[in-house]
Length: 106
Image (cartoon, rainbow, N blue to C red; front, side, top):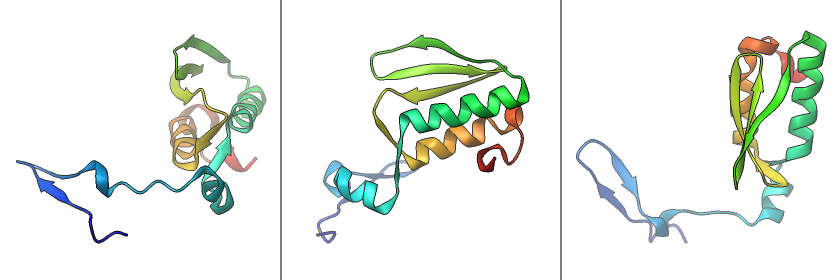
């Protein structure tokens, strides 16, 4: 399955072509724990911001994403029911300055 992965060499980086991308189905992703409910992410941030006394507000909406602001930090959150764990971890890292280093475990 992976033997047909082809790559092209660019001037400064290596680029993977579209036929090399492997995307597991959503059921498999959920089973592996690499998807998170969007509502759960928003609930966790809202709770942590409230505990710290920081404003958590929707700044603007796009077709596929929303821009939220926590204190002075803006984060982009996809408008999908489930988002990837990597996106959730990126939101967590971006909000560490506002909510504290280990805010996600509270």
